Length: 218
Image (tube, rainbow, N blue to C red; front, side):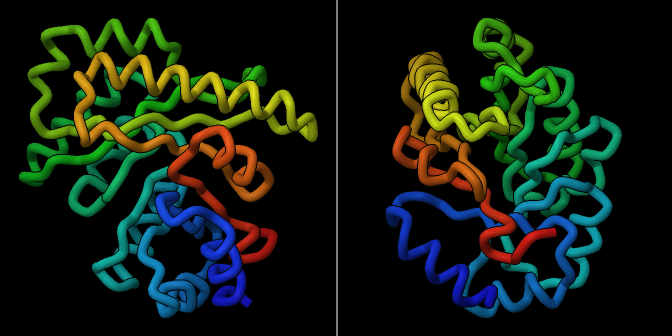
């Protein structure tokens, strides 16, 4: 089932869109099955679960931290994490840089923006992000790389609302791209999950985070 689901999704999305298989709460065996199809990008939202799975699965997996990340937990994933999606404060960015330095690594990060009308979602506002990336203290962070943006739309069946929210993240991405002098490394727009990834791709997403459509409902 997992193999067929993965193949079907990959065949339905453009080749330039990166699929992150969201494996949170799923057993090692399910991830191994997806791995054996050739898939390598997996997303988790709990640090302890992510660290345990890293220990038990092949080391060429590219692990994505897609959940809310507390500063005191960064050290547990810093040695191996491929991409942190949910950077929602400058304090968190500084801690990631600190732990990356300890591990002699550069850690890729996405800035998470609050694009939904729901109050439960984490995220930055554009003026907040521009303020800290213009700061000298930010320029001194040599062990992080800002690779793009991430956002989550409201949980709603109103597709026009979802489109509007995703569209707002594209505007944010374009403005920040200019702030980063159009660096090639600033390239990812992580938006779209099982219920809305097709809308996200139509709006310009090039990274989708899909769980239940691959692994089945939790």
